[in-house]
Image (cartoon, rainbow, N blue to C red; front, top):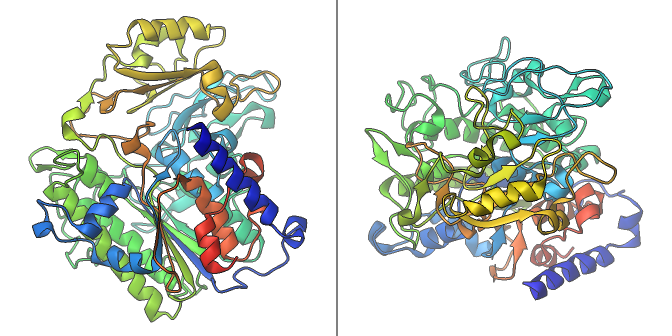
Length: 570
């Protein structure tokens, strides 16, 4: 591992040295001045490298052993396939998307989880939709610290597909559905609410492209993912985010990409949320695909006149639902064995997303932009465990439960009406002011077997990659005090509706698909260690912009994907 890290650091240094004096001095070339005019980023949330391998090569027990993702397989004929790609750690969607958009880990982005903690902020003015309690904020006073809710809880009404945005259409909303009273507040800024785009600490590829005169767009699952535009909230020209956790409703006039009507509701048993049903999630993803097709045609997501974005894309939820859902009275998703043989439900979701990608690629061709578009298919995170025999759900014996009164009330499981601890198949822990870290660690290690602890990170094993936590000089207000990574398959949950999760550091959580394609590319497989943080600087390099304009590239030395740069001649 030490040698690999040295090689990775060397690549970063070589990449930086390779920047011309012109680039290091600033950026003067127009966006898309070279062969690539557009970059499309697609995140198939949950999709592992092995899922792509199986669907393109075939696996015994599915489809007669034949491949079952023809569109992605076809795309791979002119693509670079990075098979050893690691997502963010923690592998939650929020830091996962930040990695793709900014080129940074939580060390620079400040994003650890959609629901995390910040010692320098105060609670929201009103209780969020997911249970984060309200609290006081004294302008320019001493902060109390608070859990930070950047999930669906910041919506005006997260039971509605449009997030409760005033006067919005059925599927509209976006940033208009954010309720500022649900946002944590910054006492050092007069208790102003902290919007998602100001919660991220670094700029993004979308923001850099926008600043350089390029048109930008992104489609995601919550209004909170508008952070993709970067600080200031001006980096996205078009943002679309129908609420995935809203109550399922009929979608008049909408069909899945396979032509199945979404009115009436396809699965009446799974209406609590779109991501609670194998069938309904396909309708949800469909409305985002059609929005993307509008953008490919030079329109806004809703069909108004615009231009084709220089950088744009969307995330898919279908594969993640196929991997993780146990839908009572319907079916159980997930895998059948440790070789990642998909269940019938997961197979259907992989095939569905592949069909959607086929529609997207066809649209690029029909609109005459296929040849000058770089297509990047990856995932914010994986899903764990692949081996179904390893799954253990235990919401009682968790690190946060053991520490109880030693962690902030807004994070504590003892707070039965609160938002809950930052735990999935990982436990991210912040301690109360004055609590000794060694004391807390001793408690966890004493009960290591009960909590299924695989590894514990704190102090010197945490600081190099995540900064030193605290509120003092040189300390980071968001760095956790302790991270517990459990044994593979252990999930700190009592839910019977799930058979897997993500957020942890395990291979199944983090080894994701990364396919970078253009018709001019010679197919290539790269087995060397790669990271999703390399996507953002690669986007800029492809569009003729300086990767060094990204804050995270400067802070962390994130290199571009060298093979992509080579094939593009940049």
